[in-house]
Length: 198
Image 1 (tube, helix red, strand yellow):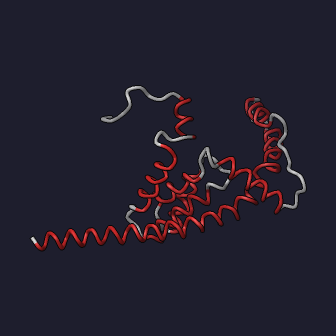
Image 2 (cartoon, rainbow, N blue to C red):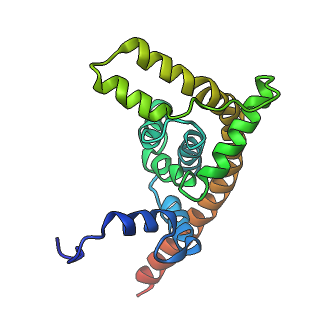
Image 3 (cartoon, helix red, strand yellow):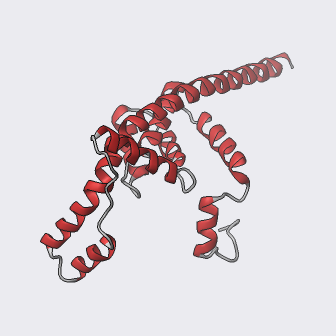
């Protein structure tokens, strides 16, 4: 590849860049904002696509956020690229806050007075059950131990939080995209007029 790095980054550098971009969060966010608003779609399609990406960032299905956002975008006929870009709202910096807020609100909505904790070493128990020849009774038992304290409240709390934040982003992105597209049309008309006048 023409502009590929000679020395590939190791896992530590890749993790650091994922948590803190090389060119700072403000520059990265400015790039994403401009890239989103330059998508060839209407402001509504861009904003709704981005909002789907934001919404799925509040779900506990890590690793499937982009696929879920694109599935929603395809289903509603809006920008899939904007939906993929919207998932950037869920990142290593924001995830701890998203998860804490989702679990806290979820426990409140489920009427739990105290926060449940997953069984100690649940991940190890799950891997061991799989290694031991897919002992489905043990696997379901471990998964139930993760579902009740973590996944269930994340879904219960993340759904309304995700909807609220997605609506805020929809309004902001739609207005911004409309302004950017209007300015671009003006520039194109000015260029066309200048060429015609020559």
